[in-house]
Image (cartoon, rainbow, N blue to C red; front, side):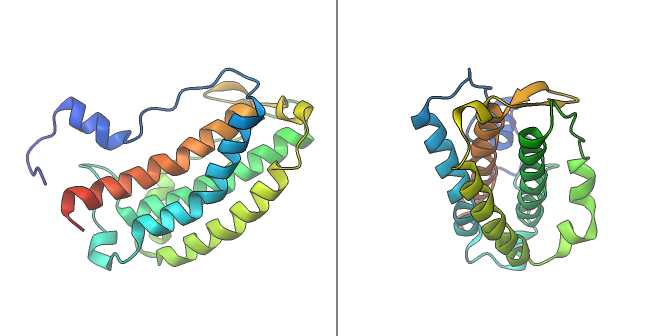
Length: 185
């Protein structure tokens, strides 16, 4: 592992191991939508596989300078996806709801994110994603066009949110697997 300062390109690669999220044109076609739902359904297993066999020292290693530890990443994914599930439900049931944001960096500093057993968040992801994706598979074409208002990102429809969270799980798994590769774990 390179212990010296990272170049801007190395830092960018560590921050965005699968690339930055690109908002898709909408509506998504049925195949793209199915792939995104499958990615969300598989995210708990991908995260679980990424942390398999890591000990506490490894779980408490940051994936990049000034970045979260692996443990914080796992808990962040659970926190974020709980928020996303609620956002999806709000958009599905209300007319252009303005959603709340949360200070994810501050949540990552809380004691549970820094110290708690990752297995609890992995179990939470299993249950949440099972329910979330079962429901997503029932949405009609018209329901995918429903929108919410994000205070920072503006108007987003459910297709765009779907693509974002399909990317999000892979993005954070990439943080963990990239660290494992660099460290030889």
